[in-house]
Structure formats: C-alpha cells, structure tokens
Amino acid sequence: MIQITPQMRVLVALEPADFRCGIDGLARLCRVRLREEPFSGVLFVFRNRKATAIKALAYDGQGFWLFHKRLSSGRFRYWPSRADEAVTTLAAHELTVLLCAGDPSATQAAPDWRPVTPQASAAVVMGD
View 1 (cartoon, rainbow, N blue to C red):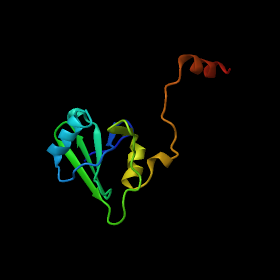
View 2 (cartoon, rainbow, N blue to C red):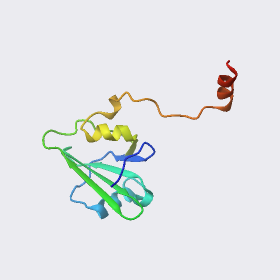
View 3 (cartoon, rainbow, N blue to C red):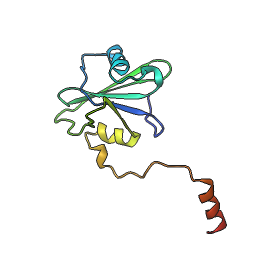
View 4 (cartoon, rainbow, N blue to C red):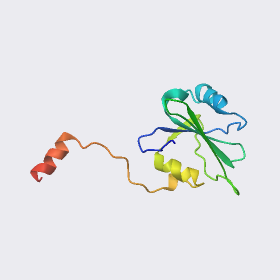
C-alpha cells in the first residue's frame, strides 16, 4: 500500500490524459510530456478529458502502483491550470482535497514548516 506523506512530491499533469493508457503509457507521458522520471518515487496525477476520473502513478522501489478514481456522479470541477507549463506540484493535503473533488487552492492549511534561523532561535532562548 502506498501512503501519501507530507514529504512526498506530488506532480499533477495539467492536460488531460488518455485513460486507455496503462502503467507503461502513463510512464511514457511522465517522461515525454512532463519531463520527469517515473522511477523517481514521485506521485504523478492525471485527469481524463471529461473530468470524471483521476489516475495516479507511483513507483515504490519494487514496482508501480496505479490508482484510478472515477466519480459516480458529477465531475472534478477544479483542476490546476497554467498556460505555460505541463505540470504543477501539490502538497499532500491538497492532493487529498483534490481526490475528494474539492478545490485545493481554497484550503486553509498551516504554512509549510521552515527551519528557524540560528539568530532567531538564540533571541528566543535569551528572552529577547
């Protein structure tokens, strides 16, 4: 089983994919269209043309995982878009929202953690 962790890199293909493709076809799309290596451990997410289904492809070191979610009714109303790119990144919590047919850009999650600079942490210790 694949676990989606906050440290996992998630790449979303912005253009619809042909869902007749299996693992090999999607891996080829990763290389050709997204210019990424499918064996890198990245989770790749694709949407069909009708926006009724999502496929996710991941390599875990032993083999590929292929996930397919098709909505029983309705469509994925939100999908990331950028005019000049073929792919965008999502955080793990944003992917969870997207898989539930929500809008990840509307989430109000805490900002990503950043390391504290040595000067700022020294000021906290000294009570400044």
